[in-house]
Amino acid sequence: MSGDKKVLFSGMQSTGSLTLGNYLGALKNWVSLSEEYECFYSVVDMHSITVRQDPAELRKRARNLLTLYIAAGLDPEKNCIYYQSHVSGHAELAWILNCFTYMGELNRMTQFKDKAAKHADNINAGLYTYPVLMAADILLYQADVVPVGKDQLQHLEITRDIAQRFNGIYGDVFTIPEPYVGKVGAKIMSLQNPEKKMSKSDENPNASIYLTDDPDTVIRKCRRAVTDSEGAIAYREEQPGIRNLIDIYCACTGKTQEETVKEFEGRGYGEFKLAVGEAVVDVLRPLQERFAELSKDKAYIDGVIKNNAEKAGYCAMKTLRKVQKKIGFPERIR
Ligand code: TRP
Image 1 (spheres, rainbow, N blue to C red):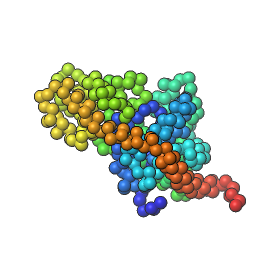
Image 2: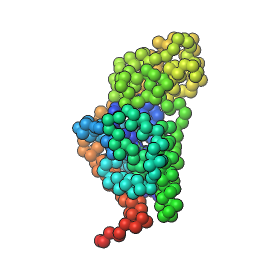
Image 3: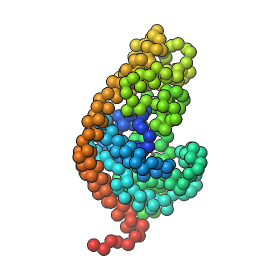
Image 4: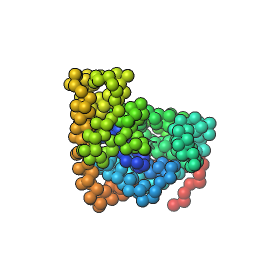
């Protein structure tokens, strides 16, 4: 470890196929942060089993996600890219932190309430204590910053509360993490319902652009995007569909909202949608090519998995041993 850089931790679940929203809203920013921070980017497969998964599918998706991290530009020599389930410290610290988390706190988590409503037949204890595992992820690496979407801010807040509570009793054990909320415009909404975030678990395949979509599919989905009857390409509250397409276009081309509005002044929705589709295709093409190439190189990916799991395990163990000692677990005899 370099030691002088601040530590950054983030993770994504290996459930569903990643969308353009995941890429523009998270992954792309991760790449830009990777120079400045000592980064841990985890494939949080342990979080995924809070809802039922098909084993073969979960395994395949986890590997694809890890490969995608690299395809998106994260250098696995400089960033620790690893599977959460390969570092047993996550589960061990999560158990300990469970004992420092109140049910009252967990009862307030809005994501739990949403997921419990959605999976009424499987409201398991893991779903309930999901935020504690997330706290363990972050605190295990003494992370200073955590890039997260707005929907995860409440989980980061509870992480800070748990860490502060623990530090209050045992001294300065954990670094208190700060959220890192990405630049504006990165929040990509559903193409079919622009009031809703673009989600990998959306049932309507036309609502999301997947990172694996071929050019024709991307263009078709953009053409079908729900807009309005205003007939003007403007960035306005009343035109959430057009606003979302402008955001996508800006994120893909690097242009500003004003430039985009000006560029398409007086032009029709059809033409604009096509331009958005093409801009997305241009962003996805190199990503897909790199992904295909990497996927073929089994030995290389296996090496990344092995080396980074060891590196993560080493860092995790340092914190875990300290915690165990503080709370009074007996010392190990060597
Ligand atoms: N809960 C996060 C999500 O669904 C994923 C996650 C798990 C995470 N552990 C984390 C994100 C730690 C940041 C830090 O998006």
